[in-house]
Image (cartoon, rainbow, N blue to C red):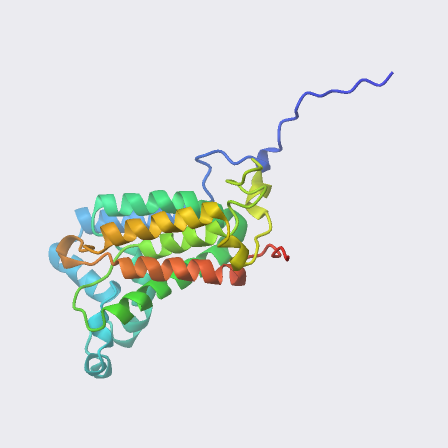
Length: 251
């Protein structure tokens, strides 16, 4: 007589996803941002910190034709280029960076498990650039600097929406609890936007940004701009298929 053991087997250790088991790229990226903020807050003088902002924050005034052509802005052409990304590593306060790191851990963590390091960093950089461009187009010539990883985090949220609510996904109606939950096939954007959970999430996200973001001035006059949040979010939503290593499900 055959005897069958119906005792559930423990999943392989590599497939477990404990709550605090963050992908290494999230730990390193968050650690770098935190270290920069600690350095600015407790080590650098006010003058040195101001110079750091001149070189690495995103300043819309840099792109006014007469300023751009003169090449006299701090950092010159190099800063004109790299500040589209480097502004994301600077934050205005402890609460600013804590909230960004929290949301990056949640949504960026899900995305990093699916994408791997290179694709995750590529999409993150694209969202930072999109956020800076959105702010530049709506605040051209502004003398207030923009700082913070909010555009990147917003892009992580939007990209994660493309798969987390799918069947078998980490927040799906029928969900898996192993690493495969982060590798379920995504559907085309049109089908994603027909998902009621996604629609509710986007409506709440845009509502919160309009309520809290319109007055987005940070410490020292630095701006945490809601336009950058939206730019990053739209980029994450639209660029997701270009970075996604999992074949898309077709209807």
